[in-house]
Length: 373
Ligand SMILES: C[S@@+](CC[C@H](N)C(=O)[O-])C[C@H]1O[C@@H](n2cnc3c(N)ncnc32)[C@H](O)[C@@H]1O
Image (cartoon, rainbow, N blue to C red; front, side):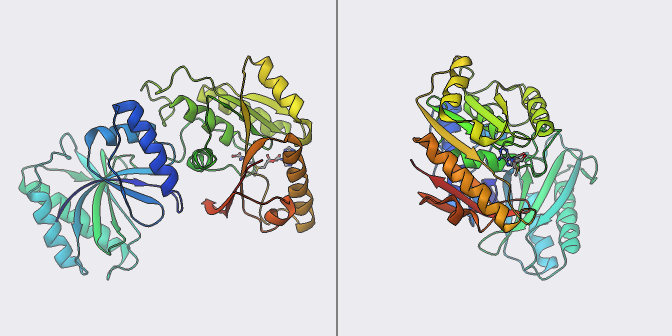
């Protein structure tokens, strides 16, 4: 069956952030609102296909990992009927998504419930697309290393095999500006999710990450404020070129901080860096740093991904999270969001959260805690 949808794919539990970001981007880039999406699970949004919205998402959407055009859907449960349906669909498809394409590669995801192995599903989808297009007089090769189009097949929440074109050609969580990283860098799109969930307003908020590591959160916040293109080096103009984000990032580890500074330079953003323990970034210091940079923020927002996981002994974790809680309270009126995967955090931080939601970043399976002053 022919399908035509724009699928925005991200991490679990990020639908709300992805939708809010896409709405903001489309309003600015296209001066209209996108239609309401259907939610497929907790980390995928499905919009009616729209070339312009797709182009805007592809260029500017930071909270997703992939942008996909759904092309065909099949309820087949076995390989042969799947092949037959897809061949017919591709042969009768006049949408021209394959124009100018010489080679494709095929990937499958989440097909564990299909009554065949992953490789067999890949083979079937490949053959069906190649054969179906050949019937239209379009001859494409399959080349997993050098391809112009990446075809993805996945089972959707309705149990159908969905075949689509991955417009991002693979996950784009690495933007290209981060060549140096600290010990546990956050995936870039999760930093973007944090900023949206914390309702970061670049015109008003001074953002502070006192444990910045590779600088991911600070750099993503600054890029999001400007509405910069996601891929480093993309010449697309920023959506808010005049934005002047106010971002401070600190870390006590000098090597890490040097790497963060290089990363910020590569990303082309101004971040105010500070070396030292987080406690040195007291309220006066933060406002003074902002004033030195000519910024006049109205309020403050802490965005931080503190050390977490097995590397941290329980006693150390309690001490660190307790100190973080004391530091945040001493700032008095800063909002805060912490992404952390350590069960000691909530109690040791010692404040009642305004929002707690499960969020993961690679091996980090944790929670996002949002606090209001
Ligand atoms: C999980 S990493 C942050 C990773 C970061 N979000 C990124 O994407 O690269 C935690 C960082 O906290 C720093 N750190 C730990 N304790 C600190 C303290 N008391 N003051 C300042 N920085 C601290 C470590 O040096 C480390 O770089």
